[in-house]
Amino acid sequence: MVDSRSGDDGSFIRRRRECYACKRRFTTYERLEERGLLVIKKGGNREAFDRNKLLDGIARACEKRPVSMEEMENMVASIERELRDLYEHEVSSQAIGEMVMDRLQSRDEVAYVRFASVYRQFTDLNSFIKTIDQLKQR
Image (cartoon, rainbow, N blue to C red):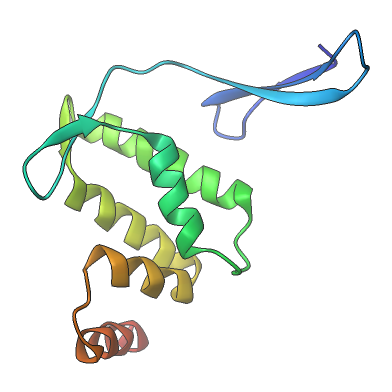
């Protein structure tokens, strides 16, 4: 191990390592394993909370936007912390979606509209325009 430091929010440890054989360096991240949290989907089925799935959704919304991977990771970490503080065993996917939208709206409006269009399942142009108008009023 070359270097070890904890993340900004203390939720993970970042370690720089070096392979003894080829001398290449790489980074590993260690996280505390939390108790299981189930997500209740719109259809009523339940699945285990997956932070990578959350990060992928945020990354898709932020694609080609000036939002760094570190900022996206921090969003996911803060959402996960809030979920574990507020909910003991189960949380609705709607609650998670609202948390994501709150954070994206304050960070990048285009990413917010992209995420909202998928999350709220816009069916026509008027729904899209209505969301943009609400964003303009804020």
